[in-house]
Image (cartoon, rainbow, N blue to C red; front, top):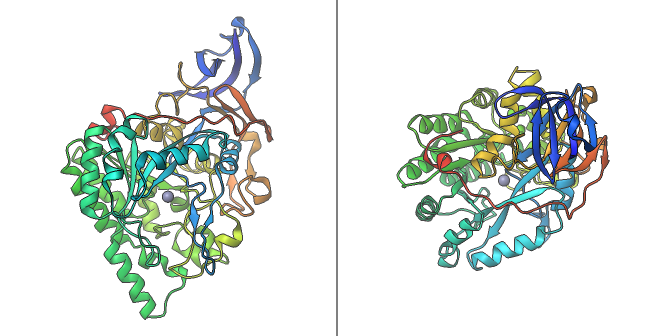
Length: 476
Ligand SMILES: [Zn+2]
């Protein structure tokens, strides 16, 4: 007797897509069988998935909830949308797992920072979640000493910036020596380093240069956060990490062909390094800055150029890019458009809801990727790299029953009014070839035909452990 049977759909299983029935019991996938084969066991409910594509719930490995957004003329930062708002939108769009960040300032004991973040999220997230530990500024022993213990407790990835990003936002960058020390700790404790890599000297030089030349409009962002900066900093961090026993890298929001090339070269040397890009970088470029409200498309480092997009796309086909994330920083349009300069335009974007359907459209329909590769790029690969697999990212016996039914009959044009994130979407007018008719989180039906049935009490914290193969070679 199952709680639920998803019958008659095209199921994207780890190795291949095949017509299959999926039986769910106690929040887990309990059986997978040929169409019709599970019915005899009985079920409280059977969902007819004929004509639909059945996939594991999406995994977005890079989002920022309750994250500070500077607002000119105000002393206090605004905060990006909270987890209940973002996770609700995520479920509507077929994403069931979010990885956010736990900011760990150097003047606060590490465990206290983690506890604060845990409290903020407990009972406030509709889907499952975990945290990358976010280290910034000059690192203290209060942050470094307890790191191995925090990693053992399931915070198995640590994010660091090699740049302050903007001249008026000091304190983010971690100096190279400190990054080295952290990599040694992570190498020993078994964690992955998630790096936002830009060459701080070049970035700050370009802020000064464009200010001198009176070219401070945000449409010049790609000159500041440049392909050269990505080249220099990716290679520098990679060479450092390659010299640390046990180190592994996850390069966040790869934006340029130079970043792709640096990762590819390191992977060819056998180093365990993985690349993440954003749907934003795949589908928009620096020309889009010139459109009305062009800030809407901006996310740091910056949109780049058509040749960079071509390299990113090519790298999603079993190359240097394993995961397509959002870098979600959800806020109202007024906030997203408030800055007009290279030094005050807000980064991040709103896109967690359409991510899965958009990527299906562009990967499977437009580019002919296999369904398995589509699931890899939107769920399975990030789950593997971040130590969540096969609990998340897989339709497999024993996995959490996070199941999404993608319905080609719900093909649509994206409109902000139909989405649940905020009052705008950078994806306005994009056509998507599928849309979820149903999202299931650990066996619970949380969205059905546009009706939301979830609760902020549903989300569970996910402790993570990075598997050895992920850390020993480019395993995904
Ligand atoms: Zn980010």
